[in-house]
Length: 210
Image (cartoon, rainbow, N blue to C red; front, side, top):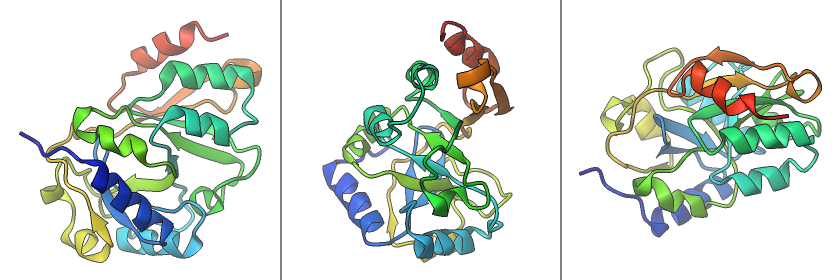
C-alpha cells in the first residue's frame, strides 16, 4: 500500500516553499519539483537542478480551486466556468495572464499563465491544506522520463532539494495541456499535449460551457 501524506507533510511543504526552498512532491499525475512562483532565486535553483532551459515557462499549481479563482479575480465568466468544468484534474490550462502574475514561472511569456489544480486522491488529500501556490515542473532532468515513484526521480534532484515527500507509486502519466487563451472571446481551445486526460474528455467537459 502506498504511504499517505499527512498534515505534517503539508506544513513542511508550505514552510519549505515560504522559506525559499525547493521540494520534490507527489501529484495526481507524476512526481514534481516545486518552489515559490514569486521567488526568482528559488526558480533559478529549480531550473539549474533540472537543466531546464531558462526561457521555458513552468506551471503554477494551487492545491484547491477556490484559492486559484480568488487569486485570479480578473477571470472573465467564460474562463471561470471552463475552469470549474475541468478542475481539479490532471490538466494544465493555459490562460491569459492579464495581471502579469508569477513572473518567475512565466519567464519570457509573461502574458500566459499555466495553471494546475490537481485532483488529490485520498493519499494526497492532506496537500489540500497548502494555502500558497507553487511553481512546479516534473521531477526529472529536462527532457527525461516522468517519474512514477521516487525511485525514478534522478538522484541529483533528490540530493539537491530541501524537502522530499513520498507517496509511493503515482499514475505516471503527465497532465494534459489545454490552451484556453482564446476561449473567453472566441470559445476556441486546443489540446497542446495529451496526457492523463484524453482530448475527448476535454471536449466533453467544455462542450456545455457558454
